[in-house]
Image 1: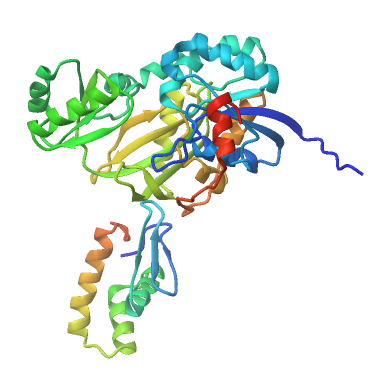
Image 2: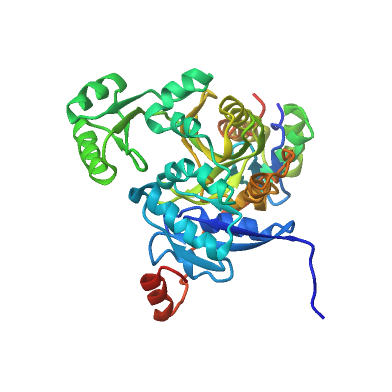
Length: 80
Length: 352
């Protein structure tokens, strides 16, 4: 799972898809996930990193993570 | 001591100074030309009505002359242009209205003979991309276009509607498109557009998707000198872009390149494209002139109007290869103040 080519992200959580012109903003956890996706980290590694940084259980985070990934797919942010 | 410059002084006449809520491209074309450092331009505005805002933009336009409406035909237009040329010594005319292009294309050789250059498509190119022939045009060149029917009689509307199903798009000969969900809506749209633009009326299948606009410039030999795709970010109730952003997607570049190559298009044009969710790019319309958002091409690094000026004057222009992605324009309204004396002058003498 990785970000599509040319997707621009900022530390403030701004996402720009230059192929569609769409732009989005996300919260700090979303920003961290995007940075990890950009570094092509595995799902397991992303879950571990986020759960160690924020006060969230793995079960709760996995659910939210799936929702987030689903949104990124809908908005064509991820490589299919 | 007077500062001298080696830059060539060029006199360029430009139409479509109606920078209103549904704007003509003239003011944007002039702004782009003014930004080019390769030549000094004296800009002559050519207007149809006394309240076209560009007439009063004296920092952009040096002098404006009214010209006869396109319905007046080529003779009255030529007579007026000869009069203006005798005073201004015009090097180049850039017409920017769909409705006037036919006359300017017809006059191309006569204008050339008196020293006025143009950079326009051939009449055959211009007519082939007409809304009325668009589907056939696409079939010939392997480009996806929505199916359509040309109607000369309201009686044929129901049959066309049955074929395309709803919603369908009812379009005027020159401008305007109305999406209709029922036969009643389509009939209403038919009469409205007939009253405004005359016959025929075009009925087109509705394509769901994201609208993309592409500004392209062809050299007339099949080469695309510049291609810049844009997505509207904010659309007015007339469907015009009030904000837009340049895109990075090779699909659109290739589509425009194919169009320019197949048609050997000369001059500027705008492709209105609908990108479907399954990745198909339909060309909905081909506008045979620069779009009103053309200044974005200059801002993004491909100054299409300036490149057109150079080509029209015989210079070889190498195709642009890059442009800035994510460049945004946001249009705005501004109350330009002028005096009754200026309005009286353009209204009374046809010059300002």
